[in-house]
Image (cartoon, rainbow, N blue to C red; front, side, top):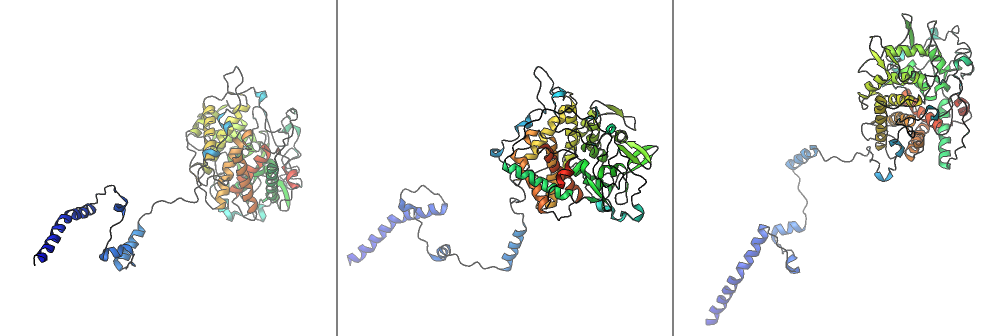
Length: 543
């Protein structure tokens, strides 16, 4: 009897001693106060029982109802964190940036003992000798390395109703004399400007001592041959004057310069002679005469920008004395220069006028426009520097070409880079570096021009932006930078796009500037000369 009462009493006493510690452990777990475990035993998860424990050990299928479905649809509409756009290339890493050290240097070295940034004029060697017909190196109308023309953002086909009709066939009465671009007029068989008289050609510079021929690596030899094969293919398919407006013909001219040919019926004629003699292109003529003065037409199919034709003649190095014939009246390129001088306006786009006027005029020339305002090359530079690059014509490449032309002409004239010229030089150099920072890994340049990095899959857009940017870079970079791997990769990329899409009907502006980039590279790196392209490219298969 006594034993029956002792046993329950002992159990009650034991439970009263153990219960507080057990409750304390439960309180700690519920409150989330996680003290560092004192032993491995304390790290083991507690055994869990009941429905909650079973649900935590095996995930039961989730039951979806209408409310749950609505919630999910609403969540799907919420903005998601931005993902990396595959079209936006990574910036070139600093590791691959051994990068154009020469860009930090002045265009020419400073002579010892002189504060000027320009060496003596005699020390400035031209890229190549200008000895071919139509190519001038007059003084002070100095002929510089190529500049660039503009691309009209609108399609030059917008006036397709203006097709040349039977009444618009070339008038054989208006033939060019022997001293013109086309030997026997526009119907001449000879497509080269071979009959220019001595009075139309600047005296050839004295030949410099022959430099040893460059020895190219096998990779550069392959690139040279691919570039020339590409140029040959497109050269052998000239533009028909019945198919293109004056704007389109100008963008055909931009590619091959003085060597450019056009189709007139079954004849090939020189493109510069055809345009300067104001012959019809798809029934449209580019120039007219008003008050006995030469005037250029603007608008769709004509000039897309003030100074466009003059800039193209400048980049082709056509002499300032070269004849222009309009409506039976005789003019020269000098009259075209005066026309563009009269039309300079403050706070307007001056990019193409600057290309032409910086090429043909002495850099210290001053003049008055038709409003009586005083103008100069220096003022044009200042006006252009005050305007943005991003958002300007063709991504601002034409603005950069104009500033580059002004600096190069100043250097070639042996005058100091100071004031606005020095500002322009620093500005161009900064944008050269910026362009390479935006270059894509495949060698193309940004399809957002110089605004930001982008690599659109649209091959036409890639041709447009890479062609324009590379054209400006090849024109403006120092010679030693033209064989840098980044430039080589871009040239190879552009060549590949043009060769792999030979059957594509490219936009005239896109194709013209892309081909011009390759022509410039062929000249500055591989040594071809203007006036000799026809003979060089006619020998290539152009497959």
